[in-house]
Image 1 (cartoon, each protein chain N blue to C red):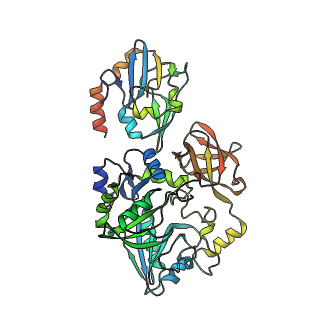
Image 2: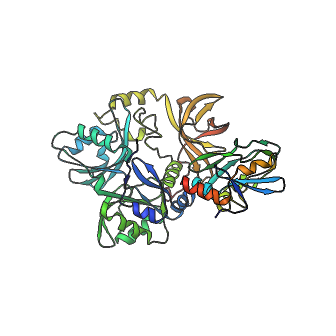
Image 3: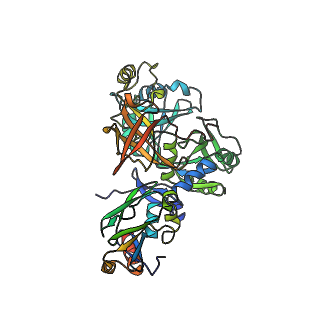
Length: 127
Length: 364
């Protein structure tokens, strides 16, 4: 079940807003499609993310996918735990599997993202 | 154009088990059930079963069957003169290109069973039939034949319990009955590096056998994903990735299946010349420091591209990337430092003699 307090994009990332900071990860659907994650390549603190652009890569045994920034901003924290325990993206995609925290540069971009309900309809359509 | 996919007799079993299905060699096949890594580890530590019903089974029969097959394949079939023996080989065209890799089983008087890759079924069937003399019977039995691989350190104990007797020795095949009823052939062969059997059966019996095997708590159903990671940890080549019609078996590291003692077989002259001169390029194993190498990624030496990755994956046992690649013979020595361009960065890759995983139930 996708948490109702998050926003989602069509590339299957989610965003949790905490004040002017956005936490970003990938959805349960995305991790399930990927299979067991073995590597994640994430930006460094201080890097700029641009909405719609790639900000990293995620690899499972079978495939590699790019990560797309759902919103723009400056990276303030990276989940270093994923370097050694990338499998938590599979086991807890909305919790311990978070990827980066960014300081939002344009909060209005959040309006373009989907609610949990809209995202579920989108996924149902795509599957 | 939409490809019409075939289904194996186990299709419904896969759906019921929640497998993720993908197109492969014209079939809808399970790529994974619970997850590739768990399935992989189940095979290395206990036992796994694989639906390989999509593979091709050919039967060749007749007084001249042996002589004809001896000319078709590169290995020496005298190794299987004794009934019930099996041998791994490749089948080459006149220029030494690998049409397919096969296992030939001596199943009866004047009779041989060939198990080949699903993706090459039509090409193989046409090639073999065209090269057999009149009087040698060739039957493509793929559609009515089921094939289930049971692999892992527990596999032999399980099949012994199911058949009431020890399975045949390594690289042998024998008749058996499972659960006192279902007639099968048990082949002590496989593609995982673990001990185990491949169960040849009537296609209609495959679901019952699959369920019998799953009634053992220690048996895990495994998909094509784990099949690929398991075979690559052993350095077993895959036709279509590690070899094809443009590649000869000497370059592919399969000299050991090319028997130049034989006077005459397809590709002999070319292969003898390559063996004499030494191949220009060789298939090597690569151990990768970070990231996951994949088919087609460039391989570099001192910044210059010298080859491409043939097969690559994440090794669940070693927990790092492993690959195979064709590189110039001068760079094929174990320990040679190369690089693989893993998309945006170059990662170091060390030439490593396969198998990447040394200790399995087969090596023990």
